[in-house]
Amino acid sequence: MAHPHHDEPKPAPVRPAVYLPTGLVIALIVLRLATGWHFYREGTKKLAYNPETGQTTLVFSSEPMLRMAVGPAAKMIKETLPNVYDWEKHLAVPRQARPSTEDELNARAKWEADYAARRKAALAKKEPAPIEFPPHSPYYDWADRIEDGWRSAHDQFVIIPGLSDDQRAAAAAALDYRHQQLADYLESQTDAIAEWEHELYRLDQMKNEAGSVSLPFLGTRISEKAAETKAASGAWIAEVRSIEDGYKGDLRQIITVEQAEDPATSKLVDEALVDEDARKLHQLNVAVTALIIGTGVCLLLGLFTRVAAVAGIAFLLSVIATQPPWVAGSNNPVFYFQLVEIAAFAVIFASSAGRYAGLDYFISRITGKCCSRKESV
Image 1: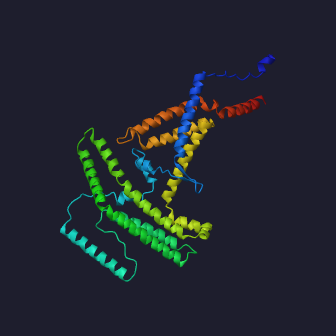
Image 2: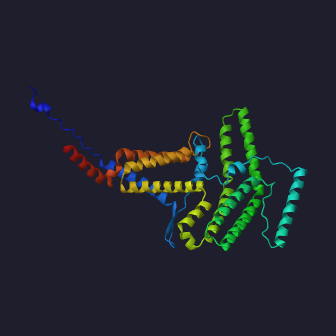
């Protein structure tokens, strides 16, 4: 016969309380607050407050960093970015700088004379003068695609139900004005773009030479030259975007307040003017800003610090993924800076630092009581 006490359940083992030295606790609190403050400040820098309107707007874009990504994930990252009318295919074309042939000079002179005559004739008839891009220019293919995109937006805009004839005429005038602005800007950059495309040609030559010889420094030199050459296009892309933003702003101003307040009309305007890739990038920028600020706030309050630490590590790893330190041409100083903060987050996670002078202390007390009640039932 078994003894009665043999059937009694064994009590759950009691975990001994862990007491950390006061100095270590203070260090953990300082580490949590310092890391949280850094994330919070960096996040709020991405926002701008207008005291006149009382509105806060996002002034941050992750595109410059993502566009300069290197390494295995670079192609996948760049495919998610707005391609600005596929500039890498139609503008970044390697072309060797060479003297023009006689036939090329004659064709250029004939086009310029014909274009000037057609513009003069249109002005004499008080008609809108034609705006064209020189077919011999180094930016012609890219500019042609930009024009097609703007005209497509115009065509979608003017068929919105409820627009008056005056509004449609204003839309056409806005297109002509911005079209001319684009033509004038690109013409002023003709020599710089031609020189840049020649640098792309030289870069291709370097890559071909690298295939026939093996020098330790050549791969690094090519990567550095590629990054330098690609970065040179940033000013042209930014200016074209600025002109395009102005054009779309012109079209939005044509819409009356009553039309803008109509959900159906507002949706049609957005469909005509908002690029889907740009929309996705904006959503990414909002998410990144919210993640950084949210991580900072949680660390400052000591609230859900382990979740915040994981979020911080994930964000920093995503930044490092754009600049892997083992890839030639990567931004190594950025990597080491991010690595220090990852170590800080790891300490915060492992120590549950929010339980010291943070709201996690109260959460742990509440959850601890709830669990003990369930066990005693």
